[in-house]
Image (cartoon, rainbow, N blue to C red; front, side, top):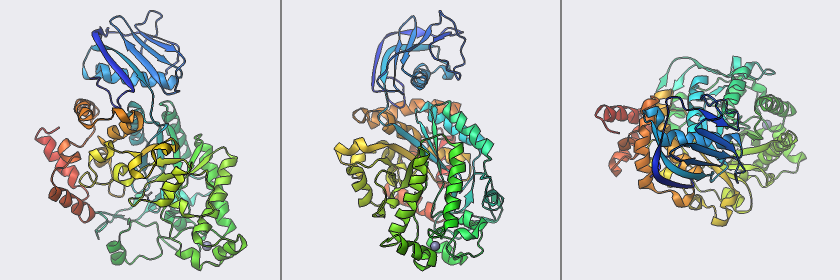
Amino acid sequence: MIELIPAALKDEILPGEFIIPDALKVKSDFELSLLNLERDDNGKLIIHKDDCSDKEGYRLEVNENSINIYAGEEIGAYYALQSLRQISRYELGSRTVPCCKISDKPRFKWRGLQLDESRHFFGKEEVKRLLDMMFMMKLNVFHWHLTDDQGWRIEIKKYPLLTEIASKRDFTHIGGWGSRKIKNEPYSGYYTQEDISEIVDYAAKRGIMIVPEIDFPAHCAAAIAAYPWLACREIKTEVPGYFGGIIPEKVFHIKDWNRTICAGKDKTMEFVFDVIDEVCSLFPAPYFHIGGDEAPKDEWKKCPCCQQKMKEQNLKNEEDLQGYFNNLIFSHLKEKGKRLIGWNEILAAGNLDKTVIAQYWTPKRDKNAERHVNTGGNMILSNHQAFYFDMPYGQYSLKNTYNYTPENFGVNKENVKNVMGVEGENWTEWTDGREKLDLMLYPRVQALAEVAWSPAEKREWNNFKKRLDNFKDYFNLMNINYAVDKVSMPAGVFNRLKINRLFRNGDTYFEVKLNKEYRSKGEK
Ligand code: ACM
Ligand code: ZN
């Protein structure tokens, strides 16, 4: 068995091994600025530019005398080096590579991971650490959730209050959706435009495209607190410090926090375009995520401007008003050569352009999403049950992610071709730092990578488990707080129910504590 995650398309172990010299030298047709090895025409590591059927694909051949990599583009060569890194286990102290032949390319072109930095802000170094692991796992899209109700995290020069006001909140809800507790401390953070460019560049060097998500028309409470005229009713509100849930709303008596921006006022539309223009200038990706999920329509129903717009445009209901609003953004993005992505709720509008990209997340099956992908629409799959990494393992165990199959979520077999790929979501309402982020992510990211990269026929749970056991040496080397098997695959239905109950109403750190206890006892 070749020790590699994600598993390659084709691999074969051959007799013999290559002994890694003290100073391995490289002869390369590519520049490969991240490869820190001396260049030499007689180097034993030889990287050839060669036609490859896929731009991210590669071949890797190891014999007793040399290591040969063949790739059409630099990223393919980097992926071959990532495979070599795992096969050799050099960082873990090994000085040999088994002779082998690998021919590899990705299953999906969109292999994504998302991070919500609104609910909690992690900062540049943490993001770079995440990008490093994505590179190792051959993941190539970082979906950066930069704005939401609880904080706006990207500098927009034309609207300075987005950082002066909207990036700060007075307190933070803790303890889960059913909890009444708050942490009564101010919380803030944002990226300057220079920070953003630094991260975009860091990611690009690793073959990772960053897709920004700036939410419209809902999940805008922070922006509305900064610029109250964005909403239908212009009233003073704060950046909310709580994350929703029925009990807290009753306890905190906070009204008017969950409002959409107005879809009828020209000034609001001008704001949306101005923000999009500045954000697009920072991100070269040909995609832009507008969120679009969970948009309550009650403000629009009572707003004279929204109602006037509906009459003017002959729209039959408020869903179609969101469709109209999204179509305006769609056209604006199209002029910039970018495609609009939105969460699957946006498909409820009857008038929405069919060439939008939908991201399917809802825990409940959605007929509109399934119709979209089965009639030629493009889709990214992030179904809750498999890819919501913020949920406890007690609810969605590691196996849910590993065994993910689009066909089980309404994508007809012949329409899997419309699927751009898969993506894991890291919402951070209940994750406030590295220790828990690591636990929620790892080893789910390894399972995600295999769903995203490896051919479906090759995925096999027991085989993955064995490779994962060996991969845990890297988690330890990198000081990553991964979930041990007893946490990532919790046994017993009562145990799982207990974990879920605690998560919702009291202790969102239960699995972190349990994991620490297991690790202190030597569990892997
Ligand atoms: C979402 O989780 N509301 C996209
Ligand atoms: Zn309105």
